[in-house]
Length: 90
Image (cartoon, rainbow, N blue to C red):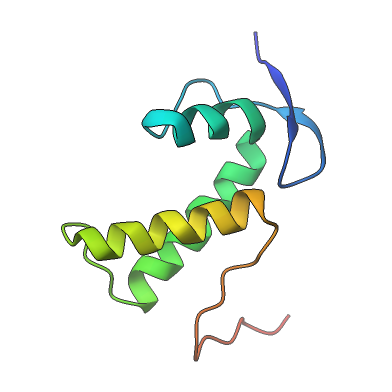
């Protein structure tokens, strides 16, 4: 049975995550307040960030940058901005 959360990112009730995907207090906050849909959006943005900025997940500073961007995206409503990236036109 799926659980419903009020998603902070989407500002609506939506299907919650099945389990905590991120460690620690931040992971608990994500589990309690972020929907599957918003998490999927973040995963797409995360992939773009890693690729476009050539982040190395072995580098502590790069992981901190990614975590900061994640918090800003999921909880502060800020979009991920990548310099030089132009979304494809429809």
